[in-house]
Length: 173
Image (cartoon, rainbow, N blue to C red; front, side):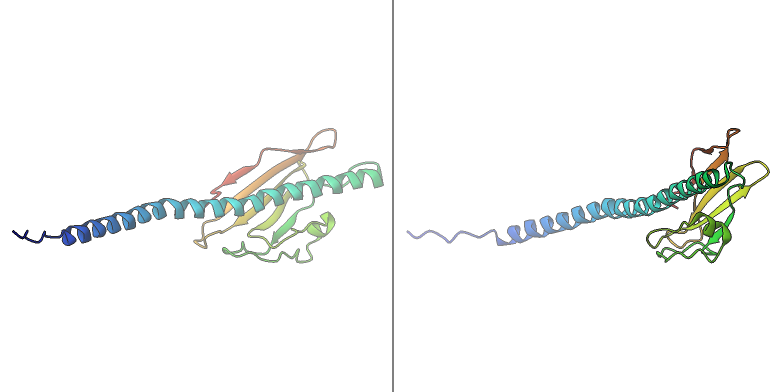
């Protein structure tokens, strides 16, 4: 007696492959939903490292200028210079080649970033109180909101430059 041919389960296999494919796409979507914002945050944090490094480099340039003044004149006769914001407006999500614009404060310090930067920098100085602030402004995602880094400092009674803690506002704006 001949046996009846067995029915294949081809339809079930196709169904399982379709379900597996949908699950794989869903898994990839979930991973992308987590990974893409994390990657964007990582990139923004890397850009803010530029601002922090540069405000500290400006502080170093102020200290060097101050020490040079003491060595040449025996005393720190001049206050920390003010320097206008360069460039005149914060860059919008693009690195720019920095130019001191011929500003006498930047010229006195001899500072400029080594590489193109995402930030505009300025120094606000009050000679009457001996206080100053080094400021960096950036608009990393071009939404009009600025991330701001402020490194305040002052001259102590002994004439030394003192760095106060950095203040950061909207770091990753």
